[in-house]
Length: 249
Ligand code: SF4
Ligand code: SF4
Image (tube, rainbow, N blue to C red; front, side):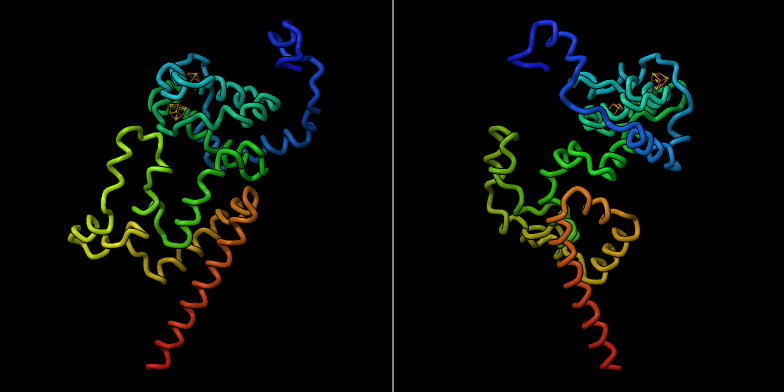
């Protein structure tokens, strides 16, 4: 117990008898086995001196309760409970800049290892992964349906309040400005550029074959259903297009 009803000691050291049941050992082992089974694991982890150079150069460590040294040590010592705990929050603080990988004297890539832990968190449908990725569902939908991540019409003052006073600059007449761009593909505000039907269908095949859609289904079933419908529609359109092309032969 911690918080308003906890004693001073409990707040300081945490409650040794936590209300939360510990994760079954088998589950912790399975999660670690998934991280270790990735072919990148042995490349990213060669040993660890616990020297802290990675943390000293890590931008995220300056701002968050986060240390790549700690994460690497958890993996190197196979601390299964610690690995599971880190996956609940800490691994999402990494900015994936890979400064750590450039500096580690052992040639480790803490950022790369964190990426493997994130993928495992998604695969196991952890709440932390769902929470972190939820705000990106609009971007994901845009990407799948149009082939573009961000379109000019998504850049609105409401969605970019953190831009501060500069946000007024994005209230510019977008349609007019886009028309002023010489390349014809950049005249739209719904997409950053036009992606043709064949490319969209090829992208769907890639996302299916690489397991991206399986991961999406684990963390957001509703979004997965919407996206599957869009993909089916576009595939039908593509088949019809091919049939029409054939008729003309
Ligand atoms: S990962 Fe590399 S830089 Fe970081 S503590 Fe271990 S040996 Fe040092
Ligand atoms: S990749 Fe992540 S852990 Fe490594 S330096 Fe960048 S923010 Fe820190």
